[in-house]
Length: 345
Image (cartoon, rainbow, N blue to C red; front, side, top):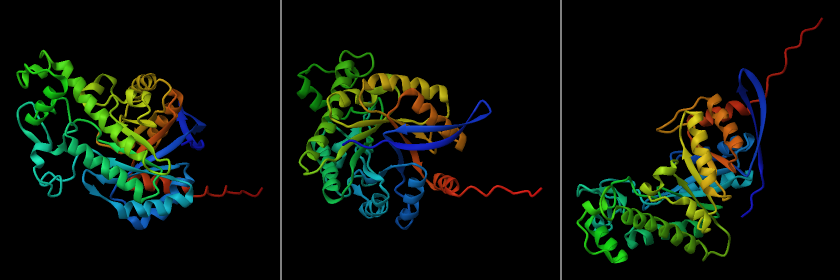
């Protein structure tokens, strides 16, 4: 679905001088927290619109848990302001360590296993078709019940490099690849005979999950965009199982948002050049970490990174995240300029 370009005017300090930057991008978005008070959305939507933001990614589901009341409040406030709302679905990380699937039986066999034999109670295994069916169903449910403009996949990956080594994963790997003489897990670890085969198979499972979501959305009688938030480093894409450049090339998604949470402009430049090259003319938006576990930016630093994102050639940007600090900043920027002091001669 085509989206009209939006204009975000920013004052950016560069080498001591003040420049007016007109950032014309196809999207100026913000990742929202699920903790936003639903009663505040009318004010927030106005602030976002006044500050040039035109898209909200609202966390509508975290694993098996859905947050429909908050999504409804966000939609009712944002759509009249011309702001798109994409439902963010946390795919393979569950909300609660004690009961991640809310009572679904046999959940231990459905979780990601580590190379040391332990099971992770918070991460679903993407190679288990029951997990893919569960999360695909939630994506379709949200898109069917609410007039969202898109579905935005988060945690669409493995937890880390050493995840995916449960006994059930071993069985599926041997079945799918036909490789039967496996010394588990040593042959599939770094340096093992089947290490690369295992990483490729692991990544293909995540890609298949993305494809399943895309296919499910095609059943709707309206267009719903599909996108994903991904990790930023090119060299680690295979480790996370996030071959997002292939997702773009195969039209499985409409756009990608790498989570470029860094306080370093030089690091953002390195990541940006790699990501735009990987996108190969596909649509990629720059995720900026205003408030994240890896970065806390000042107002000026955020403006600098927004300017840099445009210079690098990103198609748009998404700021992480909509919190009290960002809301206060937007409110301050929305205040009318004080009248100039008039001095009579």
